[in-house]
Image: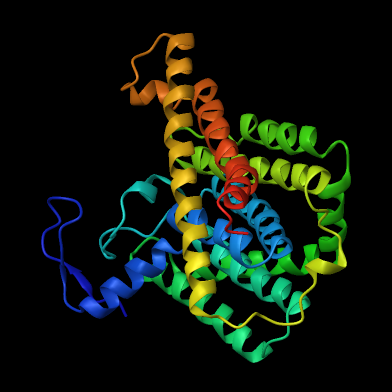
Length: 333
């Protein structure tokens, strides 16, 4: 299936592309399981589609990704050898392979979106099922094409995610209600992920899995605190007005408003991320006495966890609280 073959193995990353359609299709599909997708699609859903749909996806995504990342570092199954495969990515090569968290995330997000919107809106179920299947399949196939996972890694990731969805679905509404109404929600939303990050499985060498896990749990924690605050001090989430029978007709005006919300929101998110990165990293550099360019120091537990967690919890909070307030001030709601 792979249309990319090595030209020279002496230098990593050198290969010959023999089918550009597959190459760009699967490189794009691989990006659908990475931060660039999470930081755009999940907030977009919150700003433009439905708060309850977004809440459920973020909760499921956080749980599924944590279990997937930890499973990698417990099982310690290696990625495919190169050669014979050609690896088109280098950043995640230091991670273990089983299960594929791309496959897990794609399955969890696409099918939780399908389930949540089916409960909220009336539209052809077959259309939604086809969309979820195509999305998750493309991401799964991209992991094989890019040489980052075996077939077993991908199937294992998709199956684990599917099992978790089945197990969590009966408690879906209860968890959502608890996170929105419990007075302990803000404290637990921060404390539990932090404990999990600081007690992440230790490896014999550095792997980006802990940093990625902290990023995901931090974003989920910040968003959850935002959900709780919005339910307490803005419009309550559990009102009959939030239930809609169908998607509104897309007009030119609605499209412009949607694009304006997205543009404003993404700008705020990116500014928040960059600002918090600089501030938090600067404070940690001062506290632990290391230069900002010292990559090894930034990988230490006492630096990496607070750096990633504070930065991305701020991003999650900004996406769910600051951006909607700005939308309201600008008349976009």
